[in-house]
Amino acid sequence: MAGGSINLARVYTAYEGSDLPVLRDVSTSVEPGEFVVVGGPNGAGKTTLLESINGMLPITHGTATVCGLDVLSHGYAVRRRVGYVIQNFAFDPLAPFTVGHVVMMGRYGLLGYGRQPGEEDRRAAEEALHLLGIEDLEERSIGKLSGGQQQKVLIAQNLAKKPDILLLDEPFSNLDLCTRDFISEILTGTADAGCTIVMVSHAFDALPAREIRVLVMNDGRLTFDTRCPGEEVEERVRTHSGDPHA
Ligand SMILES: Nc1ncnc2c1ncn2[C@@H]1O[C@H](COP(=O)(O)OP(=O)(O)OP(=O)(O)O)[C@@H](O)[C@H]1O
Image (tube, rainbow, N blue to C red):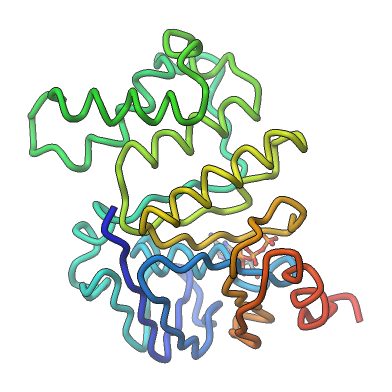
């Protein structure tokens, strides 16, 4: 994990079929190894921001450069280096994959076309299973696990990829309090190893004690940007989030 930078310059993003952009005039720079928390009210554009960074959504104006690559013209290369733990994902109970398969899928984008996983891939998957403490689930069917267990598997899948940047959308949403602390420690270790972390969250109780970069979004715009210790993040986000019901 080398740690990747993110540079957004006056970015606008619109969903297909819509003329109105959801992200509006977003500019920011994230340095390699930063731990970023993105807050703000429901519908502010936080998920849209993550999916603009990894090139899943089309940027209609402005430029996004991730790990030194232009996202519009090098989306595939960007996604090889960026992990993404999506929000509220649930596998079909009949999905024909074991936990081991799902974690190994994190390596597939790194393999050439038609190449089978090798020793390095197996080691990376085993390390990720071990880090998340889910080795005992390796042979279990993914769709038959609890939401919290599936969440851990998705995090393991993305860590097996050894990304330069890890994007996480509400990673604590399915997790009990102890597991939140456990995942928070893993993310802190991942950031300390050099990986840039960008996490969208409404839950701030499990943030690491280290310095956090806080970005707040309101109505598609980036409206607040600061750095503070983990325990102050909730207060900063609360103070700077517009009330959508006001
Ligand atoms: N697939 C889509 N097509 C059209 N509009 C969408 C789509 N997904 C989201 N939007 C709109 O984009 C806006 C921002 O949504 P987004 O999911 O980025 O917000 P968010 O800040 O992540 O919200 P939350 O905290 O509720 O997860 C919302 O107005 C939403 O309705």
